[in-house]
Image (cartoon, rainbow, N blue to C red; front, side, top):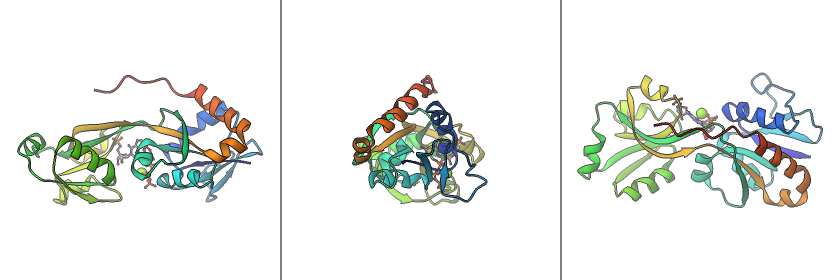
Length: 218
Ligand code: PRT
Ligand code: MG
């Protein structure tokens, strides 16, 4: 049995075409079913649904043989002990700094002010601002980061941006792009040895179906 860990939503949706390229179709709709283990058209392949940030944990400890997870999750929560053979180029976005449209980020940075930054990505943010020599107080949030500058909780946020619509709807502007993010295939190292052939075939099929690279947005 081969177990693939996915999270519901965009990772699940965007992984389906890659699975199809491997001749695998999930036979249940995760949005309609409450099941956490989904069967596929291949009796030896199943999908387990876990929280996005739990995918690496499942793969690292062998709860799943393979998984699809964002680079943001891998860099923030650890990527040790896993084989990472492919950038799948799906679920693409960027990790950015955003502030209220009326907040002068550039001059705050220039003046060496201490910035209050709210984010789910405390580790990546600490690294980024340290590399710029900007002093920050980091406030850990688990969601709705956009609210922090609007309520006075923070001067800035660090969050993922794809279309930019969420920032716009909340009168925030992107002032710095920290890094480009996309989903990665991760593989349990012991599974790769023990189930080498079937896992190799899935990796190769995924590789053949990765969407073409887009030129970076401005
Ligand atoms: O939702 P939950 O708390 O269960 O977990 P999660 O938010 O980590 O899962 P999910 O499914 O939302 O995201 C899974 C992965 O998708 C992330 O780890 C990223 O690698 C990737 N991804 C790609 C994104 C986005 N694009 C994205 N736009 N994850 C989140 N967003 C959010 C962003 O945080 C912001 O709130 O969407 C909003 C911005 O989108 P735009 O289009 O308005 O700019
Ligand atoms: Mg989410």
